[in-house]
Amino acid sequence: MASYFKHLRRHGIKLYLSFFLGMGITTVLLLGILWVLALVTIAGTDSFYLIFSSDDNVAADAWEDLFTNHLIGLIFFLMVASLLFLLYSTYNSAGIYSSLNQAVSENRFSIGSYFSGGLKFFGKMLGQWILIALITSPLFILFIILSSVFISLLGEEGAILAFALIFIFSIPLALLLLLGFIHAPVILVSEQIGIWKSISYSWKLLFKKFGQVFLSVLFVVGVSFIMWFPVMIVNTFVTVLLGEIPGAILSDLAQFFISPLITLLTLLFVFVRYKQNLRPVLFPQEETEEKGTSFTLEKVTAQSAPPQSQAAALEPERQEVQNLPPETTKQETKTETSQQQEATPTPTHTSSTPKQEETTSASSFPTFTYPDEEKPPR
Image (cartoon, rainbow, N blue to C red; front, side, top):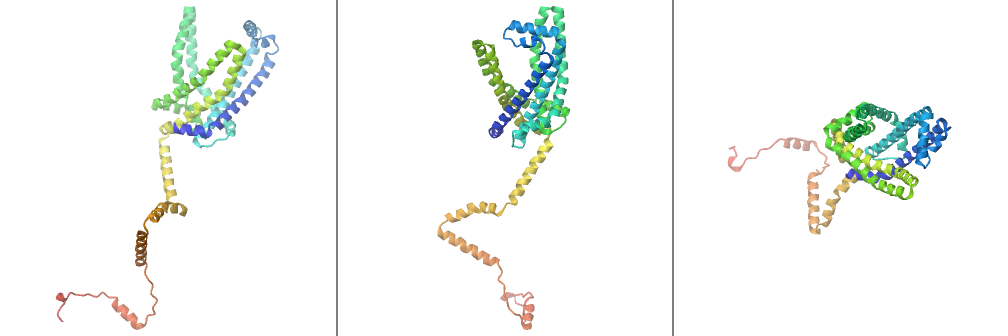
């Protein structure tokens, strides 16, 4: 948690501003494009304007008229709107994950990285989302088929039973899918590997480190609930007291300001835990090499330290010498001086004559001295 709060203090404000600006700008663009598309496809009908009526009966009649008399235009609008929303979500997800990866891995971040990262990882993120949808869609299709069978066989009781079964089985299924896929975009962006490989690594983490993955998911769900629960309560009171329109406005504003904050708090925790606790499981050899390289670099740096650092290292000894009594200092100084004089040879500059050279060469042989008691007789 210390590393989490360190990154949050250092990059939290810039990350929040980038998420706020990125989501805000893309949301405005999406709404503008959808409004123009609606004007082109179904705005020629009176029902299009009546669906925004505050009267529930009028809005319901307008929707019924659209589905019966203008079904083709409505289907075209919904298909294009779904595609645009997919592109909108993919771009923002790529920008968010690339920003968090830069902040955690490189310990630096700029607001422009959100937009550049969104473009850089847009293709891979879109492919991963489509692949996850293809993997999970058979499960939802199975739920729809079972619900239809129960309703057709049992009628109203079958509808209640189908709803109960979907509610019972959908929660653990959704939790399992969240546990399995939560690290897929993290691995995709941080390791820059393929779409399928990132998904397989994410499930590998679930089977090898279930407790660690479950803790990350629990943190995400818990923080999201804690942040949204007060907003829902306030929104309910505002809707009851002031009406649906003020409640809807408050809900939109809260989502506009709080969603970037929740995204920052939850996904930053997931990224930090992946880098520290889960990544060594996937790449143990690489982690060992990085630790060995860092140890070698620290050792080389310590050995090749500049003279200033060596002088700084000797500073405590100099302070101790200064704190000694004067007599002890003088005595130690004399001892050091005498040791230096003994270790340093004194050069002699004498001119040698031939006679001196013969004496020197003669004296170069070893001489043997005997004690007085062991001298041999002459």
